[in-house]
Length: 464
Image (tube, rainbow, N blue to C red; front, side, top):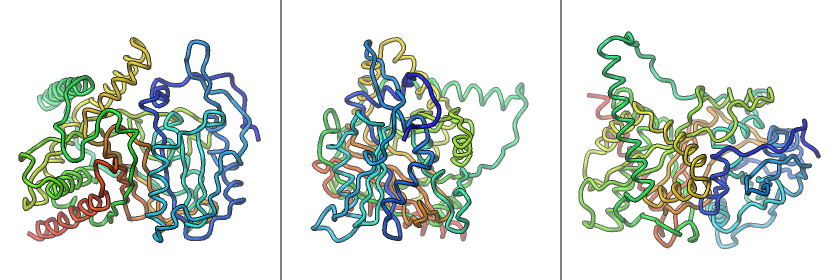
C-alpha cells in the first residue's frame, strides 16, 4: 500500500541525523499489554488505517546521498514486513508474562537494530503473552510525537468513538510583574545567571567533567553490554499525596525525589559505607520544547495533516541527585530535588542545549556532534524521562489496554529510566547493563519503597 500524497526526498533534521549515528543510534520501545487475545489480522488493519500507516515518516525509507547526508524517501508500505508475529512464549523458563516480555525487550535493546531496507519501525505481536511491542526509531520523532501517534490510534473504553483524554499537569497561574518592576528585572538577571552556569556545566560535561564512579556507573562501550529490564510501579494518588506535603510541588519533583532516595538506598545495599555523604550522580533529563505540550493537541494536528510540531523537539537538562545514607527523612530527598528542578525551570538550559546541538552539527558536522553527545552520556550516570499518558482506560484495535510502558535501546550509561502514567498508575522501565547492575528488580523495589515512605511522611506532615 502506498502512503497518501507525494513529495521528493526530504532531509533529516540535525536531531534525527544524530540518532542514526553508530554510537548514538536509539530505538524507542513501547510495550502495551492487552486484556484480551490479540487479533493479528485486526491489528494489521488498524495499523494501516491509523496515523502510523498514513504518516509520511512511517512510509519513508532512510537513504543517503553521495555526500553522506540522510534523507527520507517515499516508499510503498508492506505491513507484513513491519508486523512480526511471535506465537510461542518468548521465554519458556519464565511463567510471568511481564518478566518474560521484559527479557525479550532487553535483548532487543542491544542486539536487534532496525533494518534500513524498510521504514524504521516494527510492531511485535507476542500473542502468547498478550503483549504488543512497538519498535520505532528515534529519528522518526521524540516520545511526545510517538506517544501522540499511538494515542491517535486508540479510543476510550467508555466511548469507543472518542480519542483518549490527555492533559498536561496544571500549574497555578502566577501574577506577572511589570516589565520594569524590581521583581521582573531580578527574575531576568537570575534567569541569565542560572542559564550561564547550567550551560557552562553542560559544555564541560560534554567534554571532560565526569561523575565519580559508583556501582551504577557506565562508560565508553557499555552500550554494547547485555541488558536486563525491570519495572517499578507507582500509584499516581500516592505521588499526589506526597505533592501536598510541599507547596508547588509537581509529579516530576516527586519522581526525582524518588530516584534520589531509591538510588541512595540501592548504593547502601551494594556498597555500604563506601560513598561519602552528598555524592553527586548526574542524570540526563529530556525536556519538551513545544509551546503547547498537551499530547491530544498534537494528535489533532496530525489528523489535520499538519507536521508543525512533529519530530524531535526536545532539549536536555543535567539533573543531579545526591547520595545520602538511609535513615534520613524521606521528604528531604524531595525538598532537595524540588530546589534543583525549580532552578532548572528558571533557566534556558534546555533551549540552549537544543540550539548548541544544531550549531555543532552546522559548524563541525554530525560525526563531531555525535561524539560530543556520546561523551555527555559517558560522563553522566543515568538518563530519565517522564511522559503523561491517557487519563483513563483505552483500547487499541478494540482490545482494552491494561498497561503502557516505554524504554529505549541501550546507551553507554548503565542505567536508563523511563516513566509513563496511565489511568491512575505510573510504571517506570529500568534498563540496566546487567554486568554492572545485576539486580534491577531490587533497584525497582528501592524506588517503590521510597515513594511509600515519602507517602507516610507526607500524610503525617499534611495532618500537622
